[in-house]
Length: 419
Image (tube, rainbow, N blue to C red; front, side, top):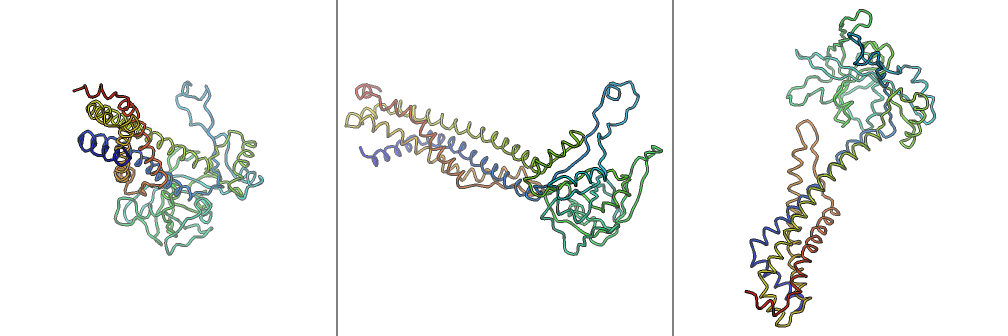
């Protein structure tokens, strides 16, 4: 027997047991398609988050005051009828800003205030986060920031307000809430520290700029006003909510963080863009690994199906095996015959799984998309698809070893005696 005859006999055997062969191929196809879909979604996630995090500067650190921990006299178990919320361990003010600016490898320190205000326009009122910072420093946080045509950005414009495209046209609405050049009334509610009464302050701003989508939630869902105006309008009394430390290069972030810790220990919180990116990558990697393990289980089930199909085939074809051996077929020929069947099932299942896996990946991506965010599309890398194909075919080959070995060891006389 030559290899061509073995191939033809294998194809005939698959055709004769069409139902079993198709079901086995489908099991292999499901495992292969799941691996392709999961691999594509994993690559798509990575590409999506790499695109989003590319809008963040790697040499930026966010400094915030750490809250004072509660003790037994002020904690929940104390006898006080009412206890004030924990205060910050340290106040971020101009003195802290100047001290951080003097550190080596620090290019600049940008102060900012944060709060929530209500904007009234066209008879409507909506609440938004307000980010008070020098408008020209926004490019430090989001380097590729872009404005719509007609925007005018100045550092010392006390009436200027910059909004994001999501604020200008909130998701789900068809008419703009705000537009360039429009005057808007801002209302800020606060508790007077002296009287303890709730007070409101109002101020009119002119929309001077609209920011295109950046992928940075600090900007995309906020309105931006001048830092000095934010200090007075938000009644911050020079107490910054955060300081943005910009190092000379991303490689200096760790060293600068250590220097800041030497100065203030754990009295302040430090968040770096690099740590955010690392956390996101670890999360997406964990999700991809979990989904991939499910896909591998499905592929193993397909391999078990191959073992069952071929082992049943050995039992059903005992007399055929005996006849082949009686006319001169050797053990190796019988072994190759059944291994070829396993390979053909694996090749058909793996190849069909490629197409179905691509379709399944796009279907899965629909579950991660919405009207107010970018769609996460699967990304199919040729290297990943080739690897999955070889894993599927290789596992099918291994699954066929036991039935093939069993068939090759049948003695001609015993095989011919069986009904």
